[in-house]
Length: 84
Figure (cartoon, rainbow, N blue to C red):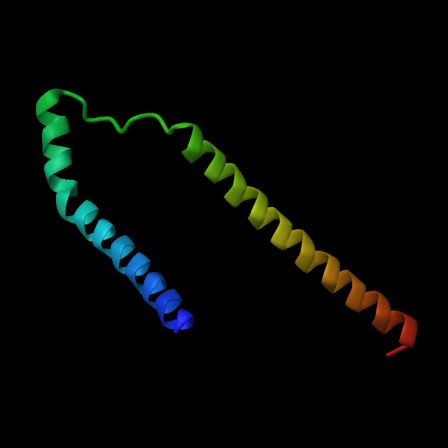
C-alpha cells in the first residue's frame, strides 16, 4: 500500500512540474509585453541560486569528462600491460 502512495506522490510532483512549465510558457509573451511597456526589456541578473546551479552544472560536466578520460586511460594501460 505504501508503494502506491509513493508512486502517487511521484506522479503528482511530475504533474505539478509540467503544469508550472506550461503556465510559464503560456505567460511568457504576456511577461515580455509587460516588461516592454514598463521599459524593462532586459532580463534580470541571475540570482545567487542560478549562479550556483550553473557552477554545479559546469562542475558536473567537467567531472564526467574527467571520469571518461580516466576510464579510457585505464583501459589503454590494461591493454598495453596484457600486450593485446
